[in-house]
Length: 250
Length: 276
Image (cartoon, rainbow over all chains, first blue to last red; front, side, top):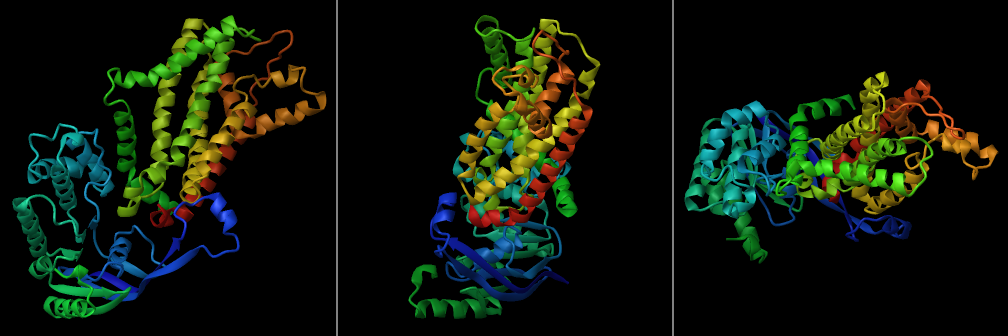
């Protein structure tokens, strides 16, 4: 069964040259062209079977985050369509809506409802969220007393409790110390063996080799390669080295 | 629009949580906590009473109650619009990274201001009992007027919050328009004074009166007074009883503003992430 179908996806952004939008800018730019259109995705098509773990690679600005943003329904495509079969959880941002003055528990309910969880669901999973984040002693303290690592752990631990069919991950697996990271990867494998679909964007080639079953290479808004992990990464690394764009090569 | 509304209903817990967060966070670290929400209306009562008693000449008995009766709902309107205007930009990290019905942001602002308004109304009723104004059957109609005002506030909040994403001047424009509206709306004066004021030429009286009865904001302010406070008659000022047809018209206009605001907001809400 197909979990994700992406058909001829295009996305254009209108990039304003002036950062501040104002009525004055509107009046002054009445006849001058003060913006340019960025064609971030140029006809991307692919489909993902349920249970696949797909890594998306590409340089900065290749359209990876835009693609993920459209799948997460943050952006609307300019044309084309995305069909997601099943409940989606996106880990584009951990701890969305967290407020420093609220306690850990209060933030769990707030963040959980942003991720689309019901109160009853959160009630049921509260203990697991707290124990996975290893925050039992601090959960009634306001978030501002947490270290940044603790905040990330809490955010991650809520996000994985959404119990999605499809997970979208944007380079956030690198949270917490080594033992927490190991827990995260264990969780990912648990998701995989439960037959869930995972799409993740990463520059970490080692993580991709460990977790992914397939890789898609995006280049300037187009799919350059879509194949097994080794084949795609091999071509991608070779291309990156050849173009001397070493920034993305580990 | 029905589909959008169904999605909003699905996310009702988020709306509720954001309202609760707003109320909790506001007074979390203050010693008096939630009582601060009551201090504002209490202070307003005290100051207005003092000024009316000692400085101004009250045109009718218990004038301070009539002032407050319009001033509190005005504050509800003004705070809803001003807070909502920056609501999307304020939550730009949420808008850029997560999916949820965007209208939840301005709606939660209006609802948390509604909570403050209801608290203030509680203080106001205590004040009425202290003053000894009569208990009226028409008090029962208060929820109707509050609901009409809620629709109006929501509608305006949708327009302002959406436009402010694209033109940040809207926030400042709103401040200016609000300060003009404050004087164009019968808050610091009674709508009846249009008929009695020596400064207004006779020919203009019907125009001004109609302006007040036809625009929903003025009509609401007047309706609060008529329903909560007794009729009055002095030598110069003659009470104009509440015309329920005008109130119904205000209800209809508010509903239309709400629907138009919601439709406008919906047509643009998926571009917010690209602009904030």
